Amino acid sequence: MNYRSIWPVAAVACLWLGSFSAPLVIGQEDAVDAEIRAVSETAAAAFNSGKADEMAALFLAMGEFIDEEGTVYQGQQEIKELFSTFFERFPGTKMVNEIDSIRLVGPVAIQEGTRTTTTQDGANTARIRYIAVCAKTDAGWRLASLRDFADESIPTAGEMLQPLEWLIGDWINEGA
Image (cartoon, rainbow, N blue to C red; front, side, top):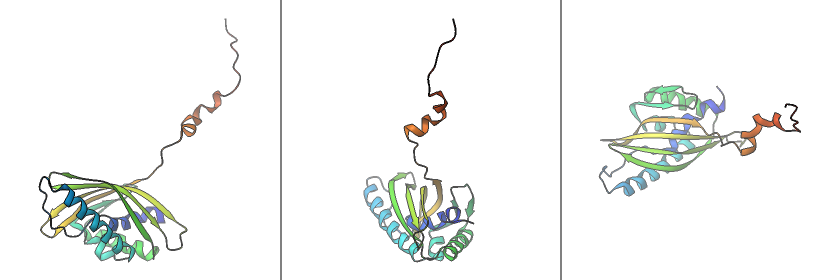
């Protein structure tokens, strides 16, 4: 396993897991948004401390994590093993979470954003976009599903025109 394929698991920490006290009631979106952002910071601190148990506890019992390659890790035990492996291979890795949006959709909250992780020596950096679906339980907000996507930058105009490069030159009409 390389750094890029295993690091996303760690990214969960940056999400918003833990307990919230505000119920999902119309008009309280701002309060829930603030709580999710606060818990996101707490989760990032747990990730940056390398605590696999705390990361797995952020998921529902049968929650899922899907990495950018489409590999599905289901259940807290499997997710804990993934985090443990990551923290063993990349000790001291730090993560920063950038939340783009948080939406309440019925009984769940959907968070979209980008995570950036950097190894302790600074040699490897990974940037991943994610979508997280959280459900409110008696114990608070828990991740039902976390999906990572490779953060591929949008090609420049020049890069999009690269396949037409063969057309450059002098053209002569030799027909009638």
